[in-house]
Image 1 (cartoon, rainbow, N blue to C red):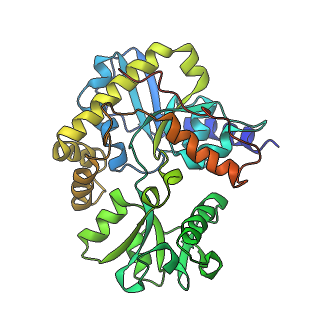
Image 2: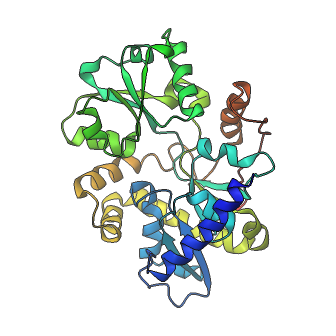
Image 3: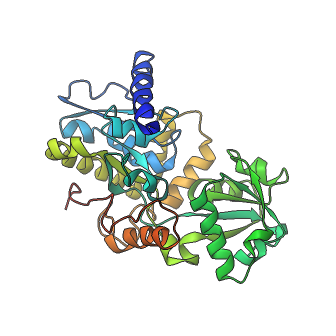
Length: 333
């Protein structure tokens, strides 16, 4: 059993190693702040994270008396690092965090803010494949992460369109470079449009796009989200509110000033493709809040709907009760 417990121990050890090697993304400008917060990303820096870097660069955390350090995840990911307490906050997704919320090994984490209001992920393919609707995935291959939830979602949208899921050739592959994958024999890949969809367009590729959130209301779940450590939230509620107030201000800056925000991200991560960053930032500025008045809000009905779908389709070892795994209590009003 205790795979999660061992992973927590590993996360602690690896984070300490990172700290010793100077793995922080903090540029030192908040060095005089009194309260230390470690924030772990879900991946390498990208435009989903811009509001965090904007809050750091513009001094919004310092205004709240916080010294925020942004680090990249170790092998077992952000959720394990937040659960272990080596990071107080991090990034996860509602779908992938679901198994961590149930059972004897449930992790002490919960979502405290939605980075994007809607699920911007879906299946992308080259126009020439003809995969312009879910049923047309039949007879083609797909790069799969081999996750039951992933494949169940594809099966649902295909069968809802009259297609046969079993007619899709599942190719075990993590397509880190989507453009190369689509040009190298992979017909369809699951991506987030705000980065890879924008990138394919910039590179002049004509593509088909199957939008999960538009194809099935249950799939308009929250991804990505900011998660917090439950014990830290309970014992340091005011600090959590300060952190999210500053973070919300950073995302508001990214909404109002997408190109200046892109400059901040590029300074923090100069290895990124500048053209993609700028185009992605422009596209995402309308997605951070969408129709909501305040950044970060999580709609309970929409959150619960996806977890009910998981339960109804027997994708979890036990049901996930409504209201599990999220709170809006720490967001600014």
